[in-house]
Length: 171
Image (cartoon, rainbow, N blue to C red):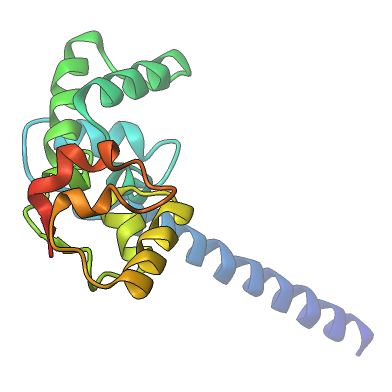
């Protein structure tokens, strides 16, 4: 009986490890099969990049063309099996499909400096937390801003920093 018990325990462990191994293999396959946008370079990116890391890491990266070029070149230096002829195609594919997000300054959305919370001022206008708090405190003590020039009265705020964004400000 003792041998049967040992065999059964050994078989259970083997089956457990097999299930774990199949689950890991399934996750790896799913990572490789992740949908990438169609385009010239897709197959190369999918094949080469997924050898070392998940494609999610690629799709989550948002870089401009120069940054993608630097990153791809570093990957090749570290052993990524990418042919020299494929470099420009891969870089163009990545830059087109996973571009750096546009900075807030180019967004068309207006920010109402009389209603925005401090966090919104930080995120949208790239103010420091201290500057945003100063804007909120000033307007609560002195009333609403009517013009861009009124922002120049806020102690601790460098309104020159907001000059390029003044078309995005609402009052």
